Length: 377
Ligand SMILES: NC(=O)c1ccc[n+]([C@@H]2O[C@H](COP(=O)([O-])OP(=O)(O)OC[C@H]3O[C@@H](n4cnc5c(N)ncnc54)[C@H](OP(=O)(O)O)[C@@H]3O)[C@@H](O)[C@H]2O)c1
Image (tube, rainbow, N blue to C red; front, side):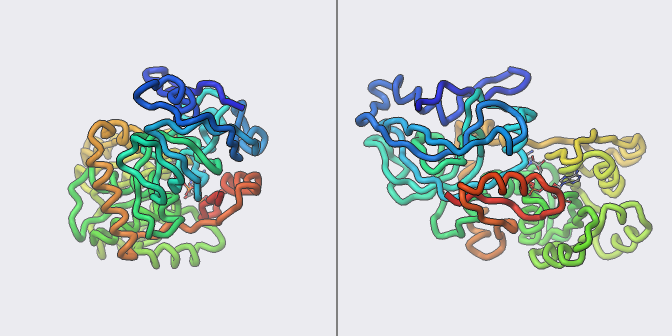
């Protein structure tokens, strides 16, 4: 089965780009002399496909899809592992900012191993580990033929789960800690959803730079265990949402300065409470909206504290830096160094075989799990 041409479009239609999955099918036919195909392939592979938007457990199916022939500038890869992230779920539901034309293969992130390279491929060789440069790759599949330009290599001596979960959440954490405030050793960052994949990366990258983190999580019966787990990876303080409104916060600020930066992955009341604790002129960066509630900014925070209210989307950052790949390469090198030094671990993960996708999708949509589902191919 050849998939028909897919596009990944912004919902406001301001830009439109082809998804790798099918653009490659098309490219292999159109590239002519610049990327000639090397023989016709009849190989197939298993993939998690959706033909319409909806509840992931209803619309995702495991199917056999054809692999296109290998072009001269393409590589054949075996996908090793791919996580299930909230944005993958939102894409399938049809509620994300960019959506593929259907049918589409699920998954935007993951690590793959190069099995074969086209004759004009320069930057990659057999055995290399690679991750996508952009969203829309369709990683929930066993194999893929990908353009050399659409993937970037990683060292293959880092843990598999670190590689599989590196391209989205740690990159988001890294950029938010680098690009909004000039954070120095001893400064403080406050964040909600601190047990999320992004949150765990923020804790570790901040700790590696000597930056304090105040980590807010929703209350749960096993709060103490979660708090211990986050402290073990470098969290300075772990508090419940309710504590943000209590006088005990004043006590906490006796041991660390008020935050220069607040990272909001939740929205609603939680975001408003983060804002109240920022220092004069500090920034709140919103990167997620798990509570599906708008952010309300108290007038006093704007007038008397002159807080900056910003947003961040790692997909846009990658696209802004796609022509000159040096910034992305430098960030990945720095993150991989932290991994190799034992300073940045993958988030807590459950490894699930591709065939057990249904259970993994269900679990990924449950609250209070604090564990990332990773499909092992
Ligand atoms: N802007 C970007 O570039 C960017 C990049 C990466 C991720 N994101 C976004 O960041 C968010 C986290 O992603 P992730 O992969 O790190 O997620 P994750 O590991 O799956 O964790 C989900 C987090 O959301 C919390 N949560 C779920 N429902 C909630 C609710 N109703 N109210 C408050 N908290 C809730 C969970 O807390 P509990 O344990 O309490 O359920 C958990 O901390 C998502 O919205 C994702 O789309 C954005």
